[in-house]
Amino acid sequence: MAFCLDDINYLQDAETLNGVLYTLIRTYEEYPGTRMGVIATLSDVHRDLKAELDACVTSVFQPAEISFDPYTAGEMCAILKERAVQGLYPGVLSAEMLDFVVTQTIAPWDLRVGLDLIKWSVLLAEAVGRKEVRREDVCAAYEHSRYVHLACTVRTLSAAEKRLLRRGLPVGEGADAALVFEFL
Image (cartoon, rainbow, N blue to C red; front, top):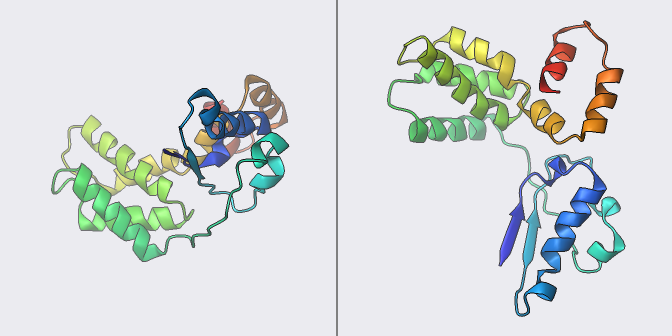
């Protein structure tokens, strides 16, 4: 059996990370004859996963690193186009608007922003009764979508970590701080 932990960096604290991995790699103890392979993807290239693992985990879990280059602009465009074709009715997201979505995705160089941007742009157009996405929909959606990674990260924090973050944020100093508060 293979188990994939996509974006394992969202398991913020070492205790959770070790608990999840230990449970998976020791499955054979509870279910004799079971063989488990664990694949973990990590999008934070600066994080040293091995340094965070307990000895009881590393005795069995011996990860091998495989690095993948970031998507090129062309690859991002192709992925977003394919998602739009698969998920939307024809004409909802014109080629011009798709190009604009790609431009907004390349700015932070995060494909998740583009995927979220398509979703929110369509929802905004639909909310006002239009069957096609306009530039103003994409611009309005970008204000939310550009923080998709931040929102996911903040959701993984414990209550104590969120309280600490609230104390350290400058109140009223810019839209970014206000948006972090929104996610808390």
